[in-house]
Length: 321
Image (cartoon, rainbow, N blue to C red; front, top):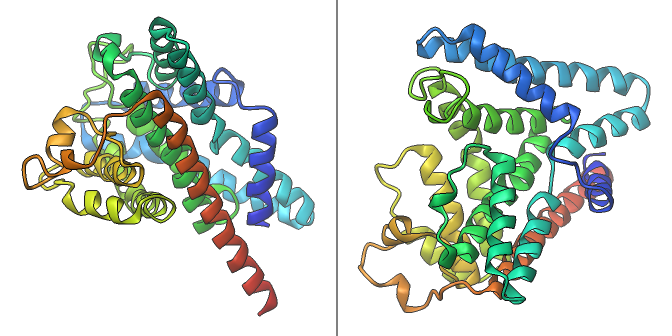
């Protein structure tokens, strides 16, 4: 059932993607903000209570709903899986924006490419500062943001969907990522007075724990379907010592993608940390071009097909046994 639900969801999403503005996302944002306002008393433990109320309760309700659906047969259970995955698993949420940016760059319209990137970026983070985007790095920034979106909207969701009952794992992962990001915004740009190092500390740490295995599986998938030797080299040479877990996972994924594609995806400071021997990685990683954007989408597609095929083999083997 898991394999069928994934395939049906991907087909449905290709036909009609989830709009950024929808009642499900709006409800999650409203509930997370309400919990933050009522629970935030300046202590880390209050962030734990808030995380349980948002992520824990939603995950438990999803498990209960799935088991109720199973009593009605496999068709209602499949329908619940597909419905939840439709709002948590989003391949088009990164592939289509990258394609649009690539088209604008190929037409020489840098201003349109920048506008598309900022629009895409602000759908995830409305407080994103456009001055952080250098026009000369639109391609690299798009690859970096797109590959991370592929991990957080596809591969991370896929892993936890397969681990927990029904679609509860998908809910756990997506909401954990959401509150870790929303409760750790800069106070100056947030409409909520949330100290990022207090109330949101547990949410960020919890997501780092939840994302530890999926991040490494994503990097492994990129290595298998890309240049394995190059990905393994960049993975090994990525200097993540002393970094917070949520930052080291980001560097790990992008370093593996860099080696798999042979393209410099990481930016200046991160790129400088990728090698213990100064200048070693610049010997063979090239600067990204508009064509590299399509290569990034292809890398993610191949990794997705790889994991779907492995899941199909496991499903068939379990059925036969």
